[in-house]
Image 1 (cartoon, rainbow, N blue to C red):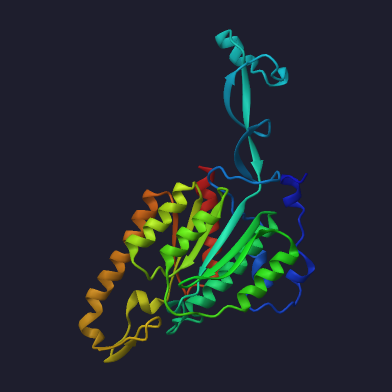
Image 2 (image 1 turned 180 degrees about the horizontal axis):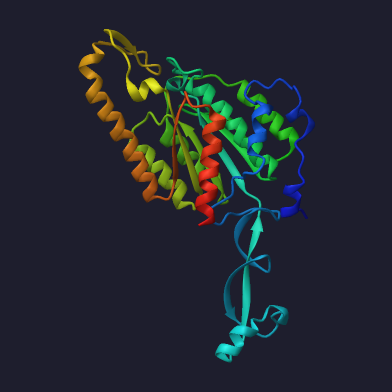
Length: 317
């Protein structure tokens, strides 16, 4: 059975670090994450010994709590200090450690195909981020799955951790393209019902759907006791609205066109977008969902590196 030491000595499979030619995986950028990991902040359910706390009790490394001694308990786990203080026998209980089951939910709807001056579309940014996260979790011996969706699930790979699975995941990303309309909330409900054991759900999306419905979908994951990380991917133009001349704006999902003078809309647009982001930030905070805004002009590896380093500091407190 593999444990914490196995992670420390894990070597990337040869095809990950060679010039395998994956479209959305850049081996030269993964070395930045050598000292960082994506650990669960709450109990998860796994099947091998690893980095993350399990909800199941055992006798492992990390002390959790006491319970009263009952005949038949292993006397090696008696807390003699507690006995000296209370004159009663108590058994030390520990948290088992386990590996993590993770799912990456990638939005591939039409709106994700937008790009103005950023180097990548939101879809491309999401694919690079998905590949990087999948590699990072596989490297630490966690299992990771992928579900790409627009109005329905276009690609579904159940969690696994083998090099062959990572190869399939990378190639699966290469076979994706942006669809049309989106159904974020419906996808969330489907996946919440499909994923039986609690784990980590990573969502990569621009969240262009009805917020009330999306939040209900997120709540469904919370009800199932999953841990959530939400990467809100937006093009800088969607945040700043830099247009200066009369412009034809086209909805990438419905094809609807509107001609408008952006100078008359800029202030109200920025106010609406700010409120849109702040609502998600607040609602996610209330649900203990980690929320990260990802402008696509910021390199995905730098964004992820900063996020993981900040997350590591918070976990240590």
